[in-house]
Image 1 (cartoon, one colour):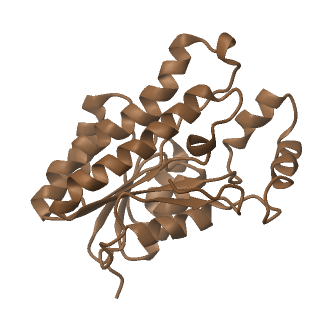
Image 2 (cartoon, rainbow, N blue to C red; image 1 turned 45 degrees about the horizontal axis):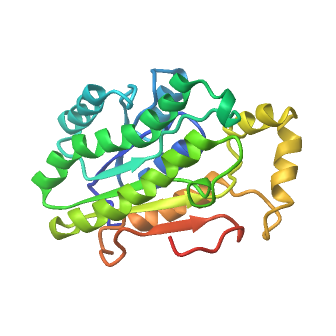
Length: 253
């Protein structure tokens, strides 16, 4: 029997790409899944219907919205056991050309949004006496990347946040870990293509040439790692960053 039977999970950034894959994977494992994205959309509603879940749209860069989302999930389902912080905002530009307001929007969404979400879900997990939090960071948070200072900095911050929260919350049986994907075949790659002045197919091929596995990762592969980390039968993995990148980076983060 799956350890997610009877559990409730909140997945952010779930309208497409990796977030949708996480939601489907956790639902298949027995969880009731609430799906979030920055705004209501047909894609979000259709995903919620597909997995018999709940749609809870809202901008997680706003603290009060995070609280509203978490409370709405708990009110609708009776509990909130799992957070998968998958949301992300990304733009790319050379450091001297990156608009300062946009730079901080990247950090406020990716790092700040996760901070606010954790604060919002903790009361519900503490009420249950346990919980699981998985943060989707990035290989670029480990290595950095040209023209991606805001995104890489925000993802590096998430790694430190996970390591610290892992230590802080483990005594309460609230287990925090991260997944750091490499280049994954999602719609977000269009940002990379635009920044490089090329088309999507060309950027996909360019990245694949740098990966020892010789291909891009898939959302489903990252979702499999997420399912492992939210398993309530496993507590020994705490504050860790699981690298899923086809072999491009081998680090001790």
